Image 1 (spheres, rainbow over the protein chains, first blue to last red):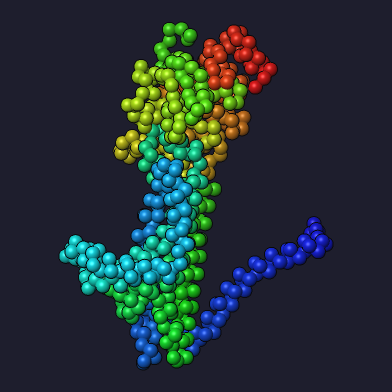
Image 2 (cartoon, rainbow over the protein chains, first blue to last red):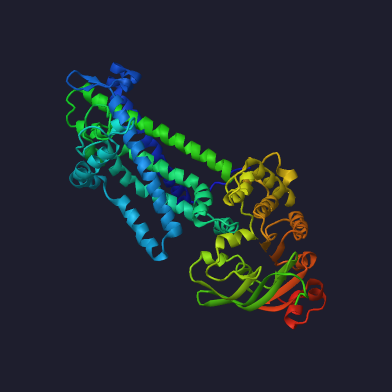
Length: 313
Length: 255
């Protein structure tokens, strides 16, 4: 069959315009990737990709650069933030959709969305000036007192609780990603068909059992989607973490150690990079983050897609 | 009305309100044990609302209010100190659209069993099988019990939902237009099933399909604008209705 082509100028212009708009995405993605490779080339050829990843030294004076510490820092803070944020977000979403009185629903939802609208620099400042002192004075000594002497987990509560550390950064990060997970979880929970809930109630389930066994499984792929978005956000978050993580180039051995992440290193050191190799290594760090985010997000999307296809037909 | 039969369930002057809107007016009806009672009437006549009073489904939404009494084994189930969860495991319900849970076929059924505290794996397995057999689904699904229930056809899903309700051994089953989303073959399978189930449970079925009511029910109740107009044995109802309204509805003059 011959494709019907419109000759109307307005139509053709409009489709061309939408095509261009869509292309902007692809072109900028490719452009960023290419320029990152180009700029990081010097460092890449000097250290080699794997050597760069596994070197735990970051020494501008000796011009030795390795990404191991910021990589580990990025993963630890991201995972901790997700561990804190996921249960709280699910609690928020379930409360809003199933439990809270209808008068409270709208104000609560708006408050959570406002939380997402706060610029990250404000989280950073709040973290540094308000939250970190509270952590170092009350919460961290308390945690140390309770958990510090328990075998195996004791060591991760050692050290001087200064408040500028892995735990504080992860908590601030988790507060930032809670709105993403909870609002997406709320939306998908609302999609659970009423009749499905009713049929669960009709075989004699309690409210909690309906939530746990019907609503959450039904909406799990949407919730995973929300977690993925939060994951991407947490991997790349810079300003909030930069204020409260300390930018120390050493592996953290305890919750109360300062360390660094890829983004924190970048934010702190771009202005100081005085040699080409230094600058190029920073670019290589960004390339690494770009690749990691890309891989993690596509993998997670793949899982969600596959899973939802299997269970939701 | 229905002679001196054993009455399983009856309502006495039952009215129901959605907020300020009254949907059911002063309905008194007796449901004999091991019988199928069909509720018929035009759309919006309150038959589904009435049906949902029997397992207190209306409790899930704020602002709903019952007035009057429903007695189930001589206990008023509308009273405040009734354990609604327990009540619902004794009075099962099947809805218009099939509602398999997002789990495997066998989990859909074992779920209710586990809720009722059955932990023994062989017992669960046996009861899953017997529930599937009694809903005439066993032969079709025995080789794919672990697959998602959403992969079944609409008719199979509806029979799975019936099996799920049966597994917790209810005494009464409420059917809310269970075949309205199904093709004729699946419909006749469900109808055969209902006739079979009547040996074990008491059934109230809401239906839009008058032939269906005539085919499967022992008694038929005709509702109109929230009121119970006439209630009689099905063959009397369809051959010799006493009320002008029921006659008009049954003969298709309105509805």
